[in-house]
Amino acid sequence: MKLVLLGTGGFLPTETAQTACYWLPEAGLLLDAGSGLYRLAGYLQGSELDIYLSHAHADHTSGLDYVLASFFVWNVSRAAQPLSEETVAGLMEHANAARVQTRIHADEATLQFVQSKYTYLAFQWCPLQFQESLRGGGRLTSFLLEGGTQGFRLDWPDHAMAYITDTVAAPNAAYVEKIAGVDILLHDCQGPEKQSGLLTKIGHSHLTAAAHVAAKARVKRLVLIHHAPLKELDYQDELAQARRIFPALDMGYDGMEIDF
Image 1: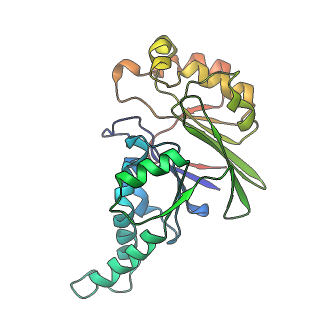
Image 2: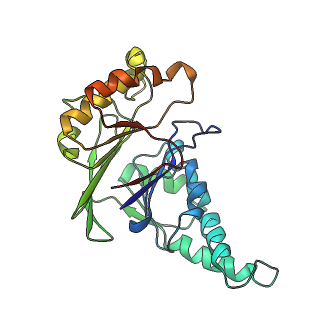
Image 3: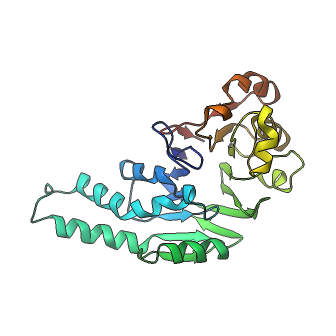
């Protein structure tokens, strides 16, 4: 299974990090739909798309505006005939057909908010179930995190991953047992331990706490995401210390591809 990080930034896109968007091409599945979704066209493998939203914040949902354009660009790239005055209408028609079949999965509050905000977008709006079937014999399990965000665990017969964002990491948090043993853990890391007080106040995780969570959950690899676009919250000088707690730790970056 391949995982592509289309956007790893938090709350504001930058030149190097668009906001939250994580793509599983073999499953046709996106975790969140931040500004990183503009990159989706280069990775699409078909016209079926499921998007699972962790919550309604704009840095996790603004990319919904790019779904139609992504399908259009993908259609152009694979069309038998070049884009022209004669072909554009048909290419757009196919892109729009894929857009209206796209399924947006979210909890009731998130779904209501996003639907009202994007009334002009025709999607299939799907209330999030506790467990949902995925392509390839997989299963997605959702669970509530501190702060009201949904966490996700995705299991297939031979591999598993988890996605935790916009919450305060703690090794004794209820979600830790739900992510136990996954191959890949994508975890919110908004800044360094020295800013732990600030990060807790704004509902995000710091580096050391995320490392302790990974160790407690016995995951195979931790990939840090949702980086703050502020130099004051850079945590690279603490990485060596965090790797003493959990050695298999990496900073996620836009365009990163992970096989698991």
